[in-house]
Every structure is written in structure tokens, then in C-alpha cells.
Length: 311
Image 1: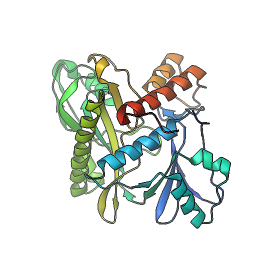
Image 2: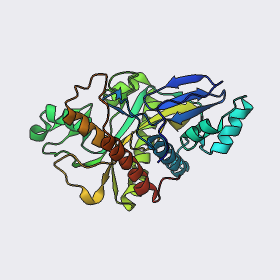
Image 3: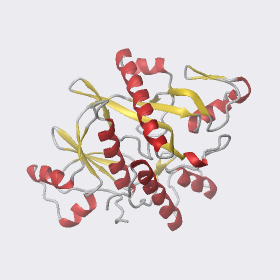
Image 4: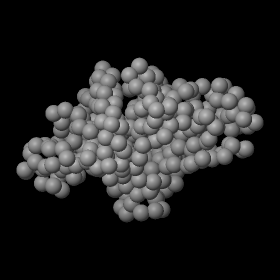
């Protein structure tokens, strides 16, 4: 387990943006994304980092970007640290040995793209926010139409849907993303772009589901971001990580209840039990919660890729 990184600082290089997890640096024609070990829950960043989390997200995104490249363009260039270090040197940036150790394994060089202002969510199972909306609408008794999608009565939490559904959401810079209908998505982007993103999202989900099934994993749902690079629809940000996806162990799957998952649901459950009111500041995380959350992320990588996280 490597020393965790809460915030990155690269002397001489301007920070373009700092998100909940990723620090982004502008290199002119490309971007450098540094994935930290920050973790958020209920849209609040926790005060303690999760060791290896940033390395898992970077390595798993790299795996999926390369795996999906034959089917859809994406912004990934490389996560090879010597190459990235040389690129920084060409921009006059000297990386110390200590900083190099911090950035190694969590840095990704990517293409720039004009990013669309929507999240593209695909759900193969009814869980999370969709399950909550379904229950609130009386869906178990009489069915419900949510965001333009008809769901039949009698569904249980974590039930598999007859076929995957596309449920876009707004991209909130602060606060919660909100599920919207496809028609609302078309009001935010062009109809052609909306249809292209829906088609790409469902296609990626299908291919990722097949891969996961062969490794005993259920991909319950996930979200994607897209942009345009040189006029071409391009997958950006991250790809099918435990931060953007809900992964379950197929052998333990049992509908009618929440499922054990390889992501931060374990942390969310602890926060709920702690009595935290979901308002900042978040409570300090106990050592066992940090350790177990880190193990969840590393296990997700091991199961999906079929090998241990590289050192």
C-alpha cells in the first residue's frame, strides 16, 4: 500500500481544476489528470484519504479505455509515468523524486474535448436513486413511469431489469446530480448528440457486462461522460471504475435487498450508522473503515482485470 495523496501540487504547472477526486492540469493540447485518494460521499469530501484508491481508479480506467477502444473513441493517451515525466520536462517542469513517487500510477495524459453537460447513466438493475424514486412513486404496488421510462409493478430492490435502461442526469458542480428524461437531455444537447451518447452508453454497458460476467461480477449500473474531440464523440473522464459504477459479486447476488458491492457503499453504510447528518464537515474515518474501503477498491480491480493492482 502506497502513501496516500490527498492533494497534488506540481510546482510551475497551473492547476486547471480540482474536482472531488481528480486534479487537472492544462498542458496546452493535452490535459494531465492526477487521481488523488480523496473520497466523497453524499457530495461531501471526507477528511481522510483512502490509500491506493487513486491508483485503482487510474489503472482500471486505463484497462477499460484500452478494452473499449475498438468500439468507441476515448481521450486516453497514456498513464506511462516516464513518458508523462518527459512531457512535463518539455514544458519546463522539473519533477522531484519524491513528487514522482506521489504521481506515479495515478497520472493520466488525455486528449482535450468539449465535454457535454450531462451524465450518461445506464442501469441493468434497479438500485440506488432509481430504486428510491420507484418506491416513492408507489412502483412496487402499481408500477411507475420515471423520467419517461415505464417500470412494471412488483420489482424488488436489486432486481434485474428486462433490459438495460438509459437514464441521463444533470452534471452538478455542487450538490446532487438529478435524473432527467431523455427529452430533457435533448434540451441540453442536440437530439443527434443525445441519441449518439445513448447508443454509445448502451453499447459500452453491454460489452462491459459480458466481460464482468466472465469474471463473476455483476455490473449493476454505471455512468459515462462524453465530449467532442475534433468533432468525434469521445468517452472522457473515467471508465467503469468503482466510483462511477456499482459492482456486485455474482455468487452473492440476492434480489430483494441491497447488495454487497466493490465500491464506497461500505463507507456510506458506516456514515449512516455513525449518525452523520450528511452536511459538512464529514466525520473523521476510523482506521478500520479506511483499511476496508481501500480493500474494496483493490478487490474490484483484481476481480475485473484478473490480477493484483500493480505496485
